[in-house]
Image (cartoon, rainbow, N blue to C red; front, side, top):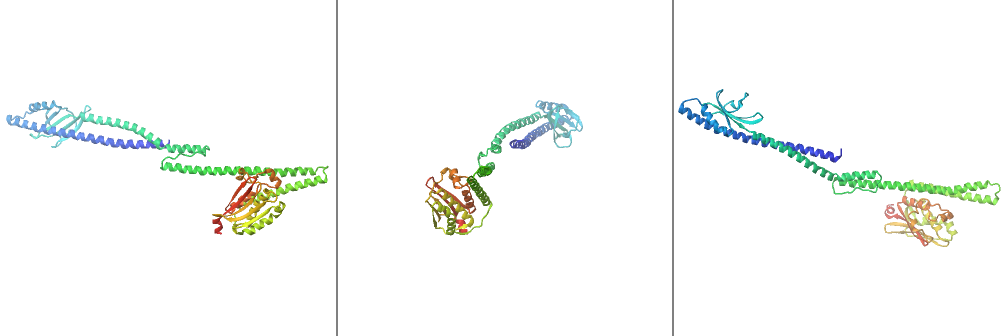
Length: 465
């Protein structure tokens, strides 16, 4: 059974029970008031008849001295019989006169001296009996008349009560159903949203209307879906990155392995000359070196993903001098001038990782720069951080490649990267080192003009150390 159905039945049941109890109490009270009015009327009639009949009998006894009251009472009773009032007169236990129903049962109205009022049903019809001692000679008088109108009134009240209960039940049922459907509409929307999202429609959200508890629940549900959706997107992105990484790794491994396999088979060829064997050995050595470089870079990348570093002061001038020394051979080979500027004299980080970071950046700039060009390596203060920049004036990077260039194995010019010995892991490693230093890697470039790679170290982190 659904929530709105339970609510409907509970509210309807409680209301009907409360209404029926209240209406029945009012019905009973109304009937009691009418009954009291009927009894008051009966007592008034009794007193009027008692006074009149006692006076007539007193006059008759004084004038005749007779005790034969039957004829006098009979004539007097005829006048009230036309009005529906019946009379009984008793002298002790002896019935003197009666034009009323006679029945054998306890007659409470004849017991005692006080007037008693009793209701009885005779042949299914309600009658009122009023009895007591008369003022004349100790006689007892009982009057009776039909109170069927009181019974009809009670039956009419019961009929009205039943009709009203049925009408109110129908109206209340209709109103309750409409009201509950309106009130539970947000819950149904929430349920629909849950089912849709469970079916995979993570882009959908529950509509929020109002500011009640259900609206708050819908808002919290949407926040939960946002968090779940974000986590799912993160997981999907991680799986895609992992798949891309594996595919690229497979591709990178396949080329040198295939070459090594082919040249090793060539060396086994009986007709190969000494020059051919040297060429094959050189190629094998080249591809083995490439595999060695690849494995080293992969290990370095995995190490950086799981490592936490301790920051310590690093002199920027000494860092730049080390990078220049390590890249001196390549700089000289292409007659490239490395210009160093040290406005910011000190940063905080891991010296070895920072050396690796800027060696990779300078190495990439050397590969991208034409012979005889210049590379700028400088540190400076920005508004809220310290920045170290590596700028070259080489072939640049297309806009479509800038966002992806820090991904593992991603290279802009695959044919040129083979020629220069690149494997697409340099900037990925640089990005990981920057992340460990709570720094950001920014790349600005214009194709065929320049490329600037900036590492922004947050000022607050540097000042803390």
